[in-house]
Image 1 (cartoon, rainbow, N blue to C red):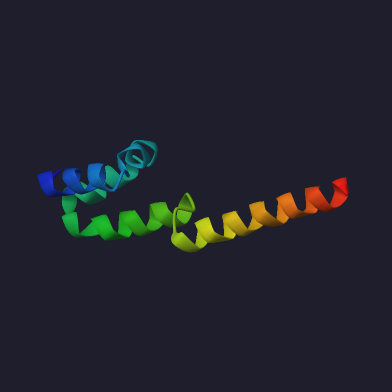
Image 2: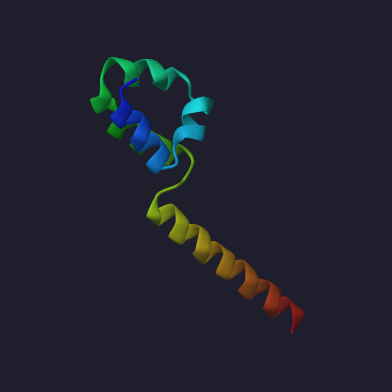
Length: 72
């Protein structure tokens, strides 16, 4: 694997996900341009996108609100 791909994996903190999805090692070795595809798939699969984080925060706020309403 090329050094720039490895550096990108460490900088983006995606290296642990590469270990869990080892089939991507083959694709990243063959063509470093596949890194963006890997990055997008991992973010979708593990819900690491901004919209997923916002939705998770909204769900947590709703849960806390419901618990507080029950306690009243």
